Length: 403
Image 1 (tube, rainbow, N blue to C red):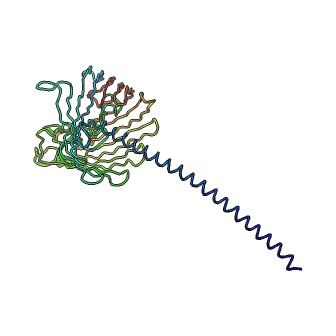
Image 2 (image 1 turned 60 degrees about the vertical axis):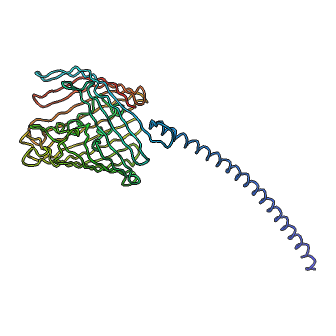
């Protein structure tokens, strides 16, 4: 009895198992067909993406050619031209009773840039400048060759340049097109302490130390103070039959690893500020540090620079062995065209003695960019100067461009 009652149950279980296996195979087949459709769709999208990448690469190459101003067809050598210029109007009132006011219109700079790409790793760059519109004997202007160097990418992310180049120090010295900074005139600290625009002849290495970290190392001609002069700016020789008995060396480390941030520090050593004109050398060390930071529409620049010069220079001017200055400049970009700024600057070219020799200056102003690289500027300023020194306040108007 047990035998016959178990058989139908066993048969029923087999049928149920067969039905379950059949249902599972059917579901698997449907899933496989569905996956195949998905794979086909992904393949089609991949082909479309590859085509878009190819088209994008073509656009990037075309844009690069346009920016470089290439001539001729692909594969030929490339030559480009650029430039910048700025017209200034200065209305300065001298607070010194015996001083002279300044009312002046000046086409301050007209600059042409020429470059040539010899190969993928060898290129030439130059900067040719006319200052103050007219140059020649008895004229106020100058014709200057501020840059003219060959650059060779000798390794991945490392290059060397030889010739005439801008010294890697400060903010303005290497980037000074009028559409790149606020204010009509360049800030005073990077004029009196860092003698921008400052160029020398020699050789310089540049490269990437790690992601976000770069270096500059340069050996070049040095400053040469004329007789009875002590201001650093008076020592620029501009690589014009420059005295080169003594050399100078500059090093810089820069960090740009955070979006919108640049932090850099430079050190320069001058073997002899007088280039052998005195019995003993007057050596000097420049230390400079700066930060630039932009977050959204707000940005700020701050810089500190200091010269430590041999005490022998005090025979020319008391306190001149220490010359230093700093400034801070917050700004706000209202939109694509309008931006406002404020700046406070302090500098002292005879800082080591107790005498009153410190200058400070407060400025506020506005920039209006007609296009990305054409700008109109206006600023107001007021100085505080040592006793019996020229002390100006007033305003500046300017227009500038670069291309």
